Image (cartoon, rainbow, N blue to C red; front, side, top):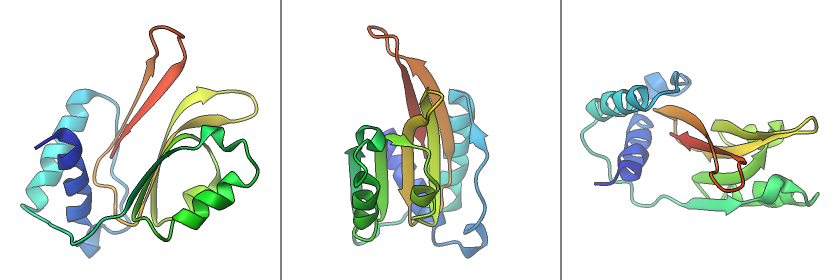
Length: 145
């Protein structure tokens, strides 16, 4: 099973536990901390097979089009989880789903952009990393939930 499948299953498994519904997991900044958090989440539940999960993954190009935020918000009801690349910090987006996680990649005086995850399910693991792209030297954010 791939790491991404483990992460998705771990996140979804905890969704069935109401005691964790409003608790944000601690932010993990090292690969070791992230792996440890994933292993702990896996111990909570052995298995969950939801009938359907609707996922949207979209590079929104810093939401430069003024109608782009409204368009993303239109998709939120049809998708359980939205993965947005080049998203900007925007409270309207952050509050559009019960759970969200944002990792900043590129910072300017005008805005911060990065990767944003919006979810109907509680986030069990929250790992964020910043790397520099080797050719263009631009920052690249990674968000593992």
